[in-house]
Length: 244
Ligand SMILES: O=C(O)CCC(=O)C(=O)O
Ligand SMILES: [Fe+2]
Image (cartoon, rainbow, N blue to C red; front, top):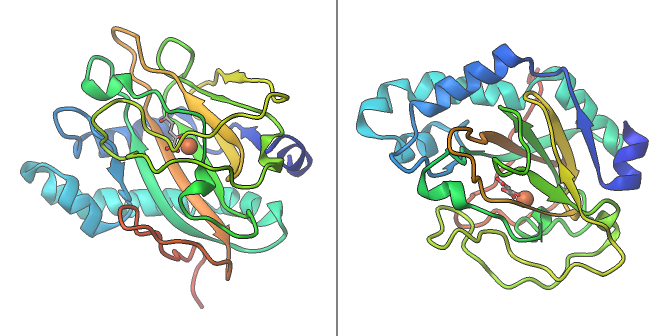
């Protein structure tokens, strides 16, 4: 697990969130979606979720945010993250991306980017976990990635709107060095992609008439490492263990 993460820049983990857990998270979150199924930033925080919820969903904010925070603190997932650099990690942010079939965000095809472009961990220790809440393939807008490209430093990338953008082209695009090979990430519901923050990846638009591609993204960094909070995401240290 740890070896393949360090070799390839990512690892796929199954069995931590079963189908029932995925369905529950999805059902809780769908209540807060707007008509376009725009992304929901930091659904584990009451204030963020409240601002992004339609009025009739505001009564559910506390329940949904608590469930999402519990997902970020899932003990086996946290133990796995702690093991990557043998340092305890903290959470920084979360995001729900629905890629709902037949909505304007179904077209959301992410340009090749490095997630660490946003928090800019100087020691390249930022990690993202993407939990697929349904099967994902080329048709419904799966991710693709370039194995090994986490060895790159942060590459130059123009600032790009990546939250509820208007053009369907989010992701601060980098030029992919020629020697990396693109790989489509076809995954089953419940699969977790554990991804090094410098790994170059993007995604396809959802062209399916009836299959959405919901994905819950959660980000982490070893405790004590610096990061850029960001005006939109407002990353902050989220403790993941019981405080004594
Ligand atoms: O939702 C997608 O298709 C990709 C999302 C992504 O890479 C990101 O949020 O950084
Ligand atoms: Fe990304």
